[in-house]
Structures are given as structure tokens and as C-alpha cells.
Amino acid sequence: MEVIRVEFIINLFMDSFQDKSTLDMVEFSKISKDDNLASVALFLSSEIESMVRISDANKSPETDDFNFAFLKTFWSVLSP
Image (cartoon, rainbow, N blue to C red; front, side, top):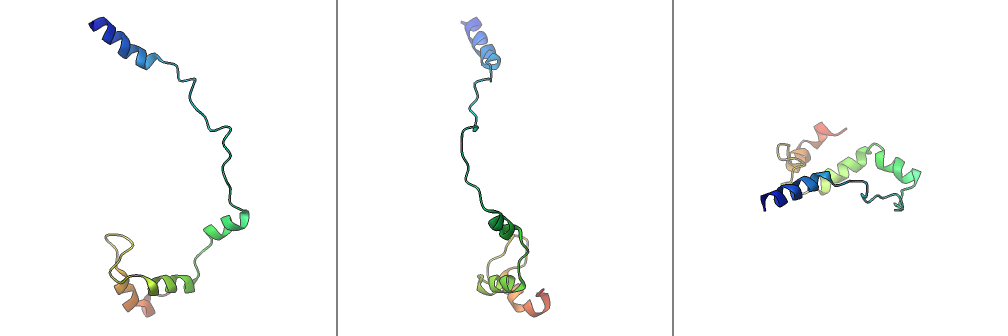
């Protein structure tokens, strides 16, 4: 019985990995060049100000960052 278990475990690691599934025949959707450029473009000052204005004052982008109440209070100093 012990020999069978050992052989089973050895065979698990000896199996060939040649039959792996691939994504060669899968068609992925793509975004246009214009959409790509828009997604990596810099934010406009007006976009940043709008997001600060509409954001919940008690929320923070990170757990250790200033919340939006701070940003709203000092926006005249911090704005780009």
C-alpha cells in the first residue's frame, strides 16, 4: 500500500505539462488609439477640482492620507 502511495505522488510531479490550455484562439476586444490616449492623458485642473468638490468629506484616497474635508478646506492653497 505504501508503494502505491509513493508512486502516486511521484507520478503527480512527473506528468507532462505539454497539454496546457492556451489562449491562442481567443479574440480580446481592444480599445481605439484615441481611447488609449485619453486614458493616459494628464488630468485637467478643472477635473481635479470637480472631483474634490463632489467627494465625500469623510473619505480619503488612502488610509494614511488627508481626507477630502482637508482638501476642500485648503483647496485655494493646494490647487494646481
